[in-house]
Length: 175
Image (tube, rainbow, N blue to C red):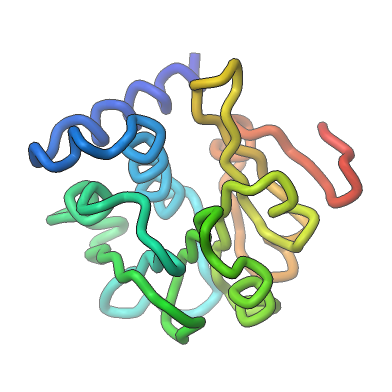
């Protein structure tokens, strides 16, 4: 029931925006909504800055969809925004590394920092990433979480989000 509710919320957020969003594959519209929702269920150790920054590394597969999803949204009173970055930069709260980005470079730069790293390649968790998107049954966007990597980044992930995820550890163990 909770999984279905989150998916419905993601689909609603992803489809209720600008016409340009229709040109972006449904997979990335759903991922954009998930990125927004992840922020709601993660606590960062440092005091909240004036804005929460979701960075997209390298080529942006979202077009304007992620920007549209975040427009006028707030999490615990803090506005969100997105920025596409071509190299690791400080100030990202969430870092999405699409399959076309230089993932090892970004993950190395984020290691030990309180950055929620999110990716979509099969080896993302093995490389030290925290959340990995994957397609279930060929088309449904799901995600898995590496709690050990979140602990190393000093991020606290809500039990509500953990219940929706497949929990994994590097080395291929799944819970």
